[in-house]
Image (cartoon, rainbow, N blue to C red; front, side, top):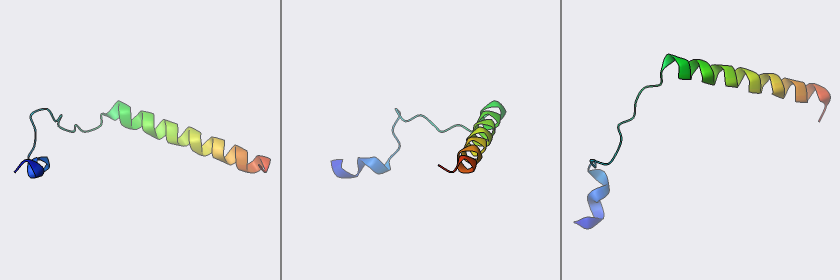
Length: 46
């Protein structure tokens, strides 16, 4: 009985929340910056 307690939700578990607009914009900005850095590194021939 103790071995299958993982399948029942616990009161301690935090529910997942949806990302806010600001978090999504931050992630998009970060992805854009990483892409730009990647292109610069590629152009340097490293």
